[in-house]
Length: 159
Image (cartoon, rainbow, N blue to C red):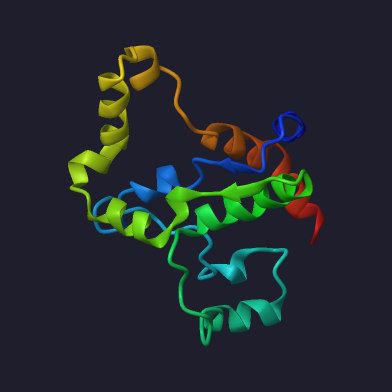
């Protein structure tokens, strides 16, 4: 789609990257296990002994956290090269620190299940198939299946 946008003479693209994360519930509001912990590094067969010994120090002396969610940053760094190569300047308003702060300041019941966005879509005349679709808006199941079906064998082959 990027080449088609560039062919119209566009110079920039405004994206929705960061919108979900902007209204996500915090760890305090919705406790969940953090992803990426190295606490059990010793039990991972593809991690060497030295990594297991120093894993607890992995966060020592690191840079301060970014003003936006790490998933938003990952999305930005994935999308930007494609757009820039096509001569399009990416604009991500939901990744602006002020907008992120606004999202975090909204009442929890507005952010939970993206209710604020759903209310806006309803006010614009969208039906339930758009505002509360029966299919989840997530690739979590696809990613999980890929990891279970292919990732485990690949990681085991690294030992």
